[in-house]
Each structure stands twice: as structure tokens, then as C-alpha cells.
Length: 456
Image (cartoon, rainbow, N blue to C red; front, side, top):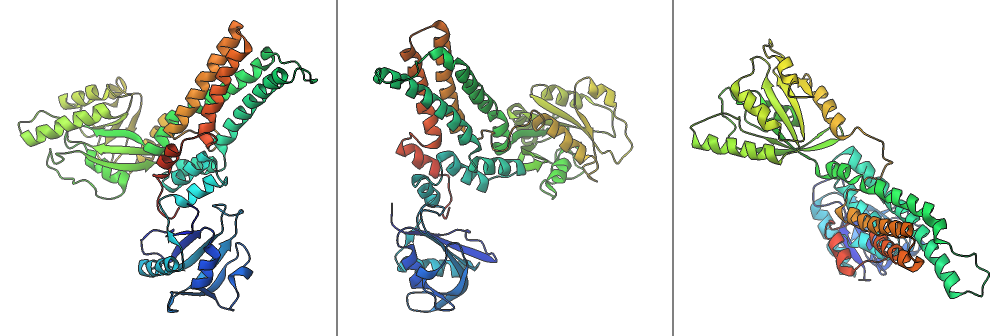
């Protein structure tokens, strides 16, 4: 584990700049072997975190690239070890050749997440911070990125550490009086900690309450576009995407299957499904499409019920209304606002709290649809940046710790002996220790870092 590792840190795509990253005890020796600084300065004389220009060479002395290099000596580096980076031209071929030169000089290929794993094992990051790294890399919305950055700055672990440290002080006071009765220690009275315990419980409750918002933030809202044929469902999908993803024709029943795309509207990520038009049909292929549309609606949390604004409501529209009622959230979308309107919007208001009129053809009204979605999923009490739980592991741990603390509070109210209460306190501390990595099994750590990409 403690040999020297290296990897391409910028992936395999063609780019202006490509980075090769190294970490481990032989890092400086590897840099010395493959990098010739333009003024012939030795790597031992490099200042930490200062860029140096020079030539990257292979083990035969052949020039591979003219690039920049910087070193960062442990323990004040990302991994806590000696590290270095080469900032090369971003040709995938050049980067592979450079990496082979680094391997020939004594490094080996880094595994997925191995740099961040070393940072965790060397105490440079706690486990929630390490998980925030991959969350930041994979963020699809501004809100997700900001939340991950906050967790990288210990927004979650900072709060849970306050709870952990408070519980530790409680236990320390109890055991100090118990183990050293002859010392002049302030008498331990469990009731004096009741207010502290209530505060800690409230802190953990507020964290667990954020998880639903966190799931929406990272996984997206399962949403379906529902409507009878030719109301503009596929046109709406294309308008939201900004390109022609779905085929649009004047022929009813053109869409025969579901199409799913991930779309960000404002700060809300949607897993949006375009469906076949709901209607009675003798075409067996179209019947399958209609059945899939109904299934998509039943599995969705949000439905865009689309209606043709240029025509009165039909029996098929009524079927769409009924199908929409089985979904937690629905927005009625009156399409074709660029044409003369014949629909009775008052009739829609009987069934829908939110109605948006727009034109998928011109894009007019799409901002109102975005606003309606924001009112459902992003409005609410403000939560400090980084304190939204997005990880199922985190919410499970905080939930277990909360359960122990609520049991301790209930036992305290019943007047049981302090040792019974403190057993629950110890259970809460053990759970919270798993959050940051104070107490965690190796297989759990391995599973966490499986999500990472090579080079990070």
C-alpha cells in the first residue's frame, strides 16, 4: 500500500492540458529520473507547490514533452505523502508514453480512488470528506456541487463531531468520578446533561430530515410526460433538452416507446421520460407503448400532463387527468400557446393546482415551467451549504446514532441507573465514529472507494 503510485488525472479525452499525478515515498526519485528542469535544478531544490518548466524524458533519454512540474512534500500534501504532478500537453498518446516512463522509473499504476484513500488513511481527510470528493466530481447541478464542496469542508462531519465530542465528555465525567473517587472531581449528575442530550438529538434530527432533498439533488426526480397523441409531448422533451432527441411528426402515435433523459431545470435534476400518447388503439405495437406510458406514470414522482391548448378537452385528455392523479406531484402543461386557444383552462383548475401555459415550438413559457418545478422541489427552509445528506450510508449511521440517543433520553426520563443510559450513549458514539472513519471496517472502506475513478 505504501509504494509509489501514478495515474493520469485528467482522463483519456483529448484536451489542452493533461495531468499525471504521483504519490508515495519514491516520488522525488521518479521525478528526478524523468524530468529535466530547464536550468538543471535538482528536484531536491524544488520549492513545494511551485511550478517548474522543463523536459519530460523516457528511460532512454528521448524527449516526450515540454511541460510543467510541481512537487508537494508530505505530510502537507493531498495524500499526506510526497506527491508530484506533471502538467503536459493533453494528447492521450503523450500522456500514456509519459506514464510508461514514470512506471519505468519505479512507480506503479494507481487503483481507483487510491490517492484519496491514502489521504483518508493518512488523516488528511475524514471519510465523509473523501466521499465528498467523488460527489463533487459527479455533481450534475450547481446545488449538488456546492453541497459536495461544503461536505469536503467538513460541513457534516463538523456537526456530528460536536455531538460525538459532547457525548465523549459526558462519558469521561461519569467514568472519572467512578474510577477515581478519591480525586476532587465534580459530582456526576446525569440529569444535568439532559439539555445537552436534547440539543444533540435535535442536531441529528435536522440532518436526517435533509435526506429526501439530498436524494432529489443527486439522483433526480423521476418524471414523466403524459398526454394524448399529438399534444406536443416529444416537442416539450426536445425543447427542454435543447436539441431534437425525439422524433416529432403530424402523425398521431409517432412515439411508440419511452425515451428517458436527465435534464436540469433550474436547480432541479429530472429523470424525464417521454411516453406514447394515451388512447385506445388496435395497433399491438402502439398498445405496448401505451402500457409502458402508464407504467412510467405509476413509477414517477412528477408528471407533466400535457394538453393541446388549441382544442377543447377530449375523453382521452380525461384519461390523462385520471392517470395523473395517482402521482404525488403533477403540473398541467397547456401547450401550443403560439396558436389561437380553445381549451377551457378553468376545467383544468378543478384537477390541477399548478398550470403552466407554454409553446414547446417557440420556447415561450419554459421559464414558468422551471419556476413551478422549483416551487415543488427547491423552495423550503434554507439549509446551510453542505449540510444536506445525499449518501445512504450517512443517513443510516445518523439514524442509528439518533435511535440510541432517543433511547438514552427515554431511559433518563424513566429514572433508570446512569450505566444503562450510558450504554446507549456509547452506542451512539460508535455509530457516529463510522461516519468519519473513527471506527469502521476495512470492507466498508473498500466499498466506498470503489466508486472513485483512477487518478483521484
